[in-house]
Image (cartoon, rainbow, N blue to C red):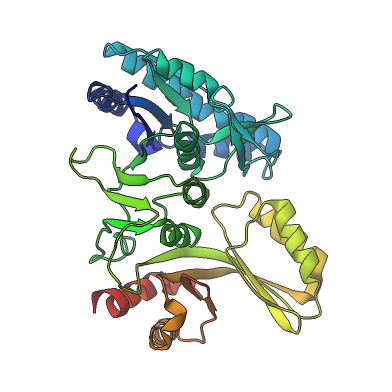
Length: 396
């Protein structure tokens, strides 16, 4: 049998009917090169935001179950249109929802996690010679409830199917041609990385890099899936950036710099109830990005604003619950230096702190992990901090 490849197409690659036809042509070309193809698709560009805006036009804090029912519609539209376009080019295709594809998740609405994959129907269709088009971002719980995987969840769907189908590789195809040493929209001299390992990519995704979703990289790491991040409509011989177990890169300590323009920072005094605060965040589905302190020291927790539904209501509940013991700030951003062996380079830590403090014009909290050095700075200082750190640590 011909090898299976999984291709994920993002919303910008499916923004209009002309692009849907172009994606269909790319898939047909892959089939005729001797591959069996599973295409995993996002909603057409802007659809998810439009649906979310409609829900929030009715309620500032929509019911999470009903939100999943609504948001899962976007990907179903894409699958049907793309399947029609592939059929029109003379290759049989069939579309499936996440549920029909066997994507089984836990019961958390809006940010579910995949528990197992049962791709039996996909295998049957592939063996029959058809292209399978799957709705990404969604699954079904054991209770048969429709769930969604959170922002970037289509990446996770693609990697999970690649693992379950023992695919040769997984391509994440979008409007960017790979992973860069920093966001090229912020740093003009950012360079594309040919390769990096799962751990480095996971640290970048966790701290704001948008090319690959964090859950997707975690899943790929656990199951040994090679990911090619590349442009959907780039040169055919351009392999983009490959993310795998042993990429064979050089010995440079700093791999890249990620950032988030805005985060929510919670500072709980030692008199507060740290355990209850973390339970409150977990119940709200707000996944901490960093967490340090506790005990006799203030507990400092950060989480991204853009991944949290009902932020204002959450902050109001937290403030009411924890009172004066809790300080909530939403005027912060984060800049994270990623690479192996950061903790073994005290000079690098000093240089990073010095640059960030000079830009922020105030003392900068620092959090150091195995592969990540995170600096919390005012939101209006994020871009300059990224630019200057890139020049200091990567370009020099």
